[in-house]
Image (cartoon, rainbow, N blue to C red; front, side, top):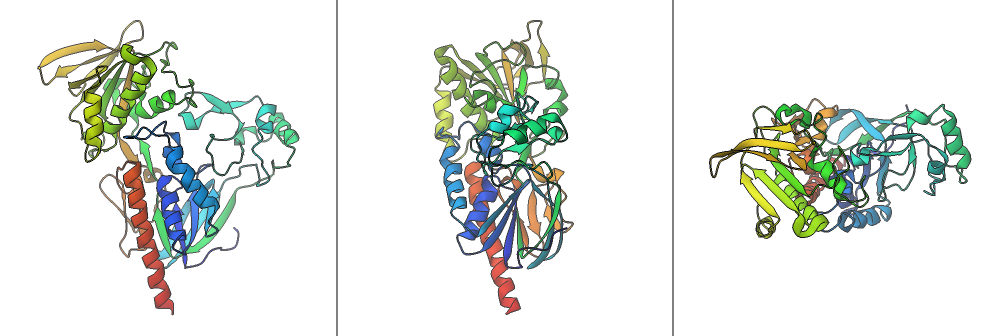
Length: 426
């Protein structure tokens, strides 16, 4: 294990998505030293995988690009990617965090030229497109990746392909001898910005996700719509590559359900309303989007967006909790249920079904300290002594805008802890 770095006046931010980046930057720009830890190869989290934000329909570059510029210009933030917190001990003002850093096999000399990727033929499922396509085993995660540095997948190590990648690198950036490291940090406060993960749609057995190829999640659909995604922005059915023009959006897929997630995930209604506009953009007046819903929860400024979608002649709404999905011989998913506004049964075929899956805290797969308090759904509230707190969608189901607001609040709470610790030590 390497020697301890940082001090009790340092803030540790766990998670490098939009919330973690915001918390780190707000604290650093207030004069505090921050270590920002992200377990994947790049910052940005799920926000970097969006095609567009609602309600303005702008691209993630609007927010992420500004934050990345702020990060590059702030020496108080130390970014550690491919680093995972494996343990935290201590109390407010005096924590020791243990980090496991996985090898990237590419050092800071990388110029992101792509020669290593060109030299290898091995491919892996692309995690940034939810496995809908493949990517070279030597790759840059995505266009907005920070740091702009390639990654060598561990499956390549010890093979001739790895040697080809190393030989192709003119900058001498590929280091195949890199090993896993353990690092200790002494920090005064911890912000948990570990984000969220989609509910496992396979658990919703009546909907056939995983069995019926033309039933996908809202996150997968977001990548299909993106020109940088697996289909170049075309809305193609996974089963046969046919363009999908008649698409069903099922709300509350796993949310507000005693058998799955009890809570409302908040973002799902707006995400589906946004995605109906992707269908219109792709197919014009020939588009057909049907939203199956319990109720639409579009609050505050989002109500205007909802009303705009309601006026869209290519979008229809069916007030119904879909009971089950079957698959026709031609691969069409067929939705079965009861329209509660007309109280008649339906069996409606669609080209493609998009499940608006609920949000779970990503922290459910992370080893959290014993004294960290979580709510009944696993979202992080903080520690009893105030030294640790949750931020963004790690603390509650939140959209991007509210996640940023939450992260700013978390940064202020962490700064308060540092100031109090300094006074107590003086």
